[in-house]
Image (cartoon, rainbow, N blue to C red; front, side, top):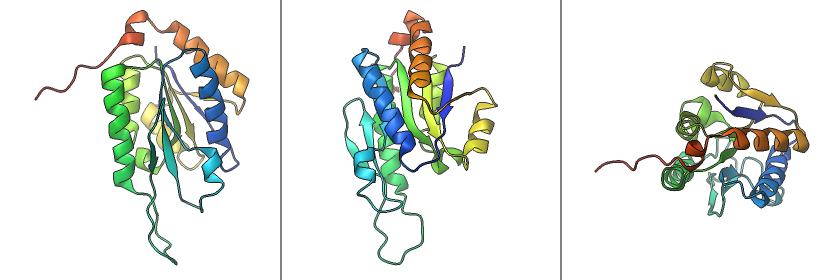
Amino acid sequence: MLFFANVTTKDRGATDRLLTSVTNRLICDKIRILGALSPFQQSDTLGHCESVLQLLPNGPVIPITQNLGKGSAACKMDAGALEEAVGILTARFTLEGADLIVLNKFGLREAEGHGFRALIADALGCGIPVLLGVSDTHRPALQRFTEGLITNLPHDEKAILEWCRRVVVQLPAKAKIRKLDPPRK
């Protein structure tokens, strides 16, 4: 069974605040979470289109934008820094496993086939549930990626917590401890 859900909010930073609250509660429930969120406390102090990712469960914090100088209208996303975050989480997933993957967004890099897309597919392939944020802009790419097999959750902490707890409890014991074989040299 595929456990894959998303949430969409309209206000800037609302998805990060919601998912941060949800993950904090789930960690208190001893659910092993692996993922990446953008700390909302910092997003209010950062300029538009500047972002950092807090890797779950215990860091590090990785800046994923670059300074292109005053007047630049180009995208400030630092694809290399994002891929560094992806590499760290993928290695953790391979070595430690997880009960749940939580990502702040299915964004442009994922829509293009990069970013956390492979980690999402690996987790789902191992039977590990995935929860992520998605904007209306990238929803069509997410629908194509999932072939429509995704649950749309309301912007409601209680409903999201219920979904997370339900799917983690339904995991077979094998999936909960599943670790991928390390790559061969």
